[in-house]
Length: 212
Ligand SMILES: C[S@@+](CC[C@H](N)C(=O)[O-])C[C@H]1O[C@@H](n2cnc3c(N)ncnc32)[C@H](O)[C@@H]1O
Image: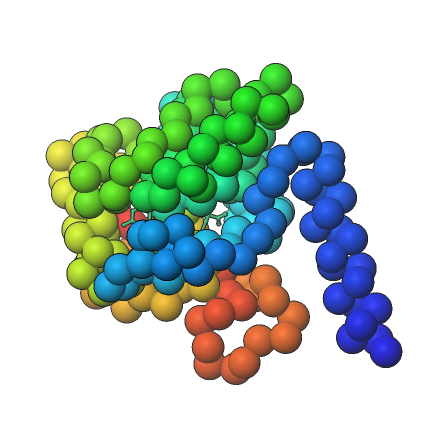
């Protein structure tokens, strides 16, 4: 009884967010339905609203900061990030269909966002030229294996070109070993975002790393 009540309460909570922002982000879509299934790629499902509010403090973000969501889907985390004082917020998404929905979501909300410099790019992350001013990155388990390794290597290369610290917020961190394996990262925070999670599984966790 309590479980169904909690489920109902969470569903109402999610719908309230969608209605408040007047956006569409809450769906589960397998990537073969979008025609982009491939090795190391999973599915589309948005991270929970409030993930960034739980992992970033308003004080730490200034207009010098740049946020990138790798595999930004319908743009939920792009919208959340743009409510902070970031100088630029970027979403990189492979699927043309999800990219168009994200563009529509940003168009509907832009006036209510703090950061107006929002860039949505429809591209494979491997074709994305990594800028040297990124300071916060977000992954919601978008890809695994060699693709994830390449992205992490490229982030390290941007730090070598322009020394600084990058904060990595990793929702469902199935490839955390790749981050720690660089020898350049430390785990700074871990939080549970799913009440019913299997012990030992990365699903249901968000981990925050500092890469330098
Ligand atoms: C689990 S969804 C996360 C969506 C979004 N970050 C959020 O939390 O709301 C993962 C996304 O990564 C995208 N993706 C998978 N492989 C990709 C690639 N190689 N380049 C860019 N995006 C990719 C998928 O299309 C999907 O939208």
